[in-house]
Image 1: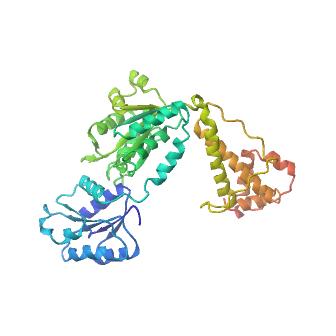
Image 2: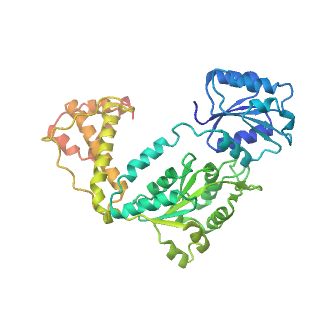
Image 3: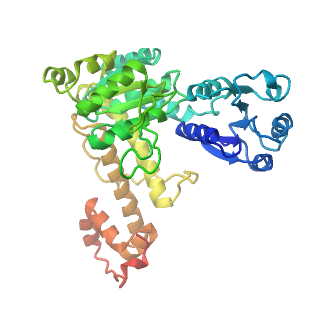
Length: 440
């Protein structure tokens, strides 16, 4: 099944486009059929997660159409019939009996979401990958302090309230946020992350809340913001302490009322979103200094989770080294064997006699991202060295084997500390006259 693909069977109307735009804002890919023939042809090619059918098209025998849709090679999924009539009684005993649900009267977005939640099952295994990854990562939380964090995460996941995650940069606040999401009842919904410090404040409002067509110069079409994209799931607002005061007021309104207006919009958009915020700042001090709204702080701080730095849980370092050592082996396989599916035999272990002395454990104050960076750099160094060994340390041949330019190889050799080792081999290279002979 095409897990997020919907079939919309309706002629071109404002109602159809409104439904399609809303479905796309929820992460669905829409296939549009303007005729019954196009709908049946689409079902010959693929399966769909669900199908919308317009009952109000003159000349369509919608009862037969709904039944035909269910009899094709492909699966239409649950069929949701739509009509602009204020009552569905006229359809009782015909198309409605063959359909799985009916929407009638003025069709509101909230009603679409409600019906989809009732009749459309989550895609098989939709949250399996995310939960498996989170499970591996939180298994590394073996210190007493992180076991306490894990307990609070489990408790926070069981209730649908806002959470504030605090801690120094690199302590894994995003892992905590994702863990809460994937352990909660919202795990089949989207998890949307926004870094409030990475987007200029004059663009962040559009990023969070979207904009209407013509709202400003260059707004050629309506844009769905992150809050709408996170409907039914979780939005993670990282670096919330850097949020501009004007946006603090709008965020407070969303937390209080659950709705907002897009930039340039007159109508309100209602969303069902759980908010998790994170910061490396002292927000209480920011409140005291009037840099952060006090009422917003208390709205966000319903549950607070403080993530201790790695220096306060040094007993976890060996687990991180083992975890990222496995990552290093995967990177080697990808680079050296060109094996993106990881289907081929793994790399043989190095001869202990040839192995360089192990690097000293990362400093206790090193953030997790530094550990990842070191592991990746070590993997890249070993991969390049292996190819150089295989090519007799000919940098021209090695660059070609690695499918990078000669110049890029020289830069990488310098970056990972192999230039001195190459000089010891003293292998003359015939530098190509045109470096572009090799793909960049």
